[in-house]
Length: 360
Image (tube, rainbow, N blue to C red; front, side, top):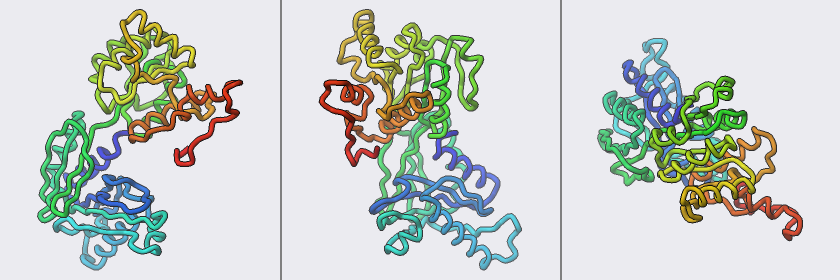
């Protein structure tokens, strides 16, 4: 599954390239609770096709109804495939959930309010440039003039929060988050599947033919090179995770060291607390590392949910990756190592207590 924003923009480009009218909706402001964060996008085609999401579904339904209703009254002679009338005009704002009744109607919890900007019939050339830049792995700042709808694009080095001053709407679009997994075993298949559904581009590296030959997950790039060479060639950046899952120091250690010398979002390795301690000791003794240089190395990886089976462990690891991606600081007692220490006899704690605000 590709990057969700890229998927929306690619569909929008396809519609507009075929001469079909369409709109792009962006969440620009929320008050209280809302199902989707600021910056979320969706697109609606004049055929009634929808891609993306700005809520749990109710607001999408309202937009579909709004423009379908307009089509039936504005152009009764429209072709059968044209079920919605997308106007040609400057961007406009729509606010949902101003009252408690409306918030409940549109599925906004706790009296939440959601504001959208609707852009009508974005230009094909601009959309193609944006999709091409994202496909090429670039980060892009997109600025929309609210008076004219004119769009400008600029290459960016890091994401910036969406801004909307009433005159210009500025949003950052990034390339796909990527996950490089070392080892093609069963745990990797579960983790790769979850990462794909979360919008990551997944690459699996394993020089062992017996593991690669039994790989079952579609949509994954499978490589046979030595892991450290693959990491070097991977152009690891701040939207990349590198996770070692083989339990084999010959495959894991050098790859992890290469990743630690990059701007990787997440670098970690599977293993028990004892294995993690042994790995760090090897790296310090044989590869001139220090405790400080290994601070970014995560292990044992995952959050503590008592996982035992490969799919449960994959859930634990994916949760930790997503927390880091979404800039959520996890309490120390949710980390696997500290949590298991508290469960040991004599630790003074019979169970791990999670904060009620931790989201667990």
